[in-house]
Image (cartoon, rainbow, N blue to C red; front, side, top):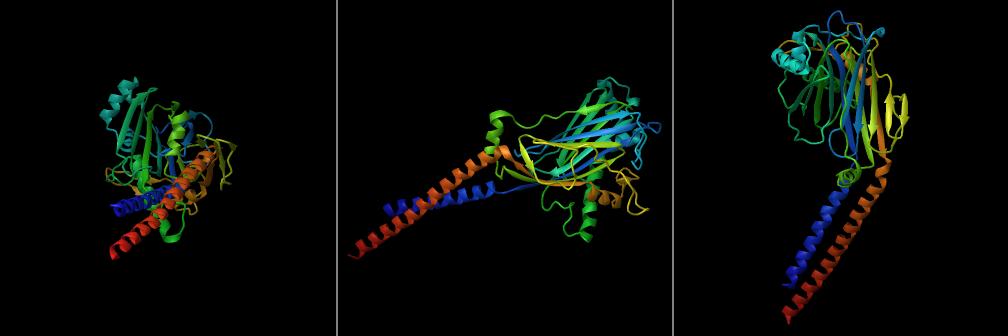
Length: 377
């Protein structure tokens, strides 16, 4: 009976040491996040020649979960920038096809928004493909009429649905096709995201010409709950790597803000920010514009959109993807003490159970020796 008890104690201590070693490895794992951002004004009336400014803000945190974002579109009468594309589509059929809403659905939501359906001639789109926090993300959709506009938000794992026509699915296919082309020429490209799953977050706004629209996002837990969440994160909560590829279409000026939920230190970036604080990076102008490498390149992401097909144009996107990229390491300064405490707690417990395991082995050997000696008498 003593032998069994000692053996069980030895096995239990080894099991606990194994579990703690695995948790320790998780707490030392540094996460890498990829973000592919597409901001566009794909549909407008032919006579709409207003300049359009877009502002995108990411809220980044080392707490598990997908990052949150907000956006703003402002139209004015300032001159268009040279080499910035114009909207490619102009009628309600294009609005319905690219937004994924039928004409009857748009009419119903327009009634609730208190705006005539024939005035909803502008479509703004933001598609964010980013590293998914979970492989179990289910398709979700939220349609909200407000501010005399219709806001649509969809979220799903990239590749989980059959190809169908919406701006988000077109962008998803552009990225996949671009990666396939990159593999032929580059062994280590900024487009590659390895074996990570990407979540496709798409935002659409149907609105009238010249209407300013804005969507703010609730983000990150606050106070004590935030630090409790950080304590149980299965990763290094002091370091992360972020990579961005940004592309805009028919946007005259696009600004980008990256906000963090605590004080951070950043590695040097391959693109100099317009301003920087201890919790944010600001880029006043990250607009996609300029000449294509080859005169035959089509600058639009896609064209000839039908019911079940479209033509994708990758050369210009791949060229600008390399130019409009941003990558850096983040050090979460405020989380360092919590990370140190987690590692201290884990290594202390691990040392205790490893010591107990060794003592149990010695004790078991002693019990077995005494048992054998007693049997031989």
